[in-house]
Image (tube, rainbow, N blue to C red; front, top):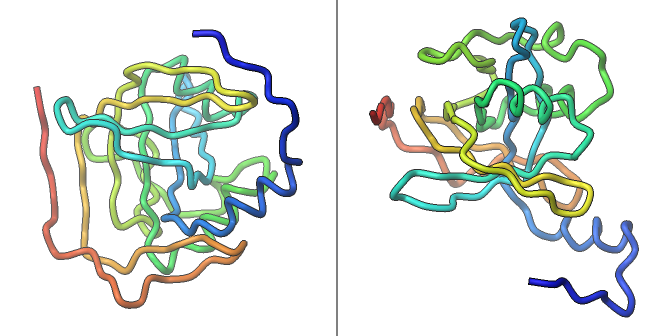
Length: 180
């Protein structure tokens, strides 16, 4: 389908301001290079797509090193940050050269993907299912292979500020599911 050319568009600052009015959870998307070097980036563009099969999507900048790594290896992890994960969110949103030297992490339980074990209350291990270019970003669809979760208060980002969702705690369900 052909995309119509808009007569005018909002400025990047106006669009950024609009999106700041929509609070969302905070995740760090991680991957490993073929040689094992971990990559990661803070991401608030995350959504569920399908239950059957279980699919989610993340939106990553087209020049992201994390995007390049997950495209090469076909796998990535989505680390959902809890209320004490703000420091990790800030590190992975910054231009720090070695982000993984700044935060504690471990290989995820099954696929060995970078898991922010002290900052994330849940991690989804995903296989790349598809991807689509969209402006200066790429929408990556992930087939969720495994989920590991612990009870915690989620970290939110909105109004250009981090906050905890004080009235909400993820229930104690300690999910560990694998699908063939």
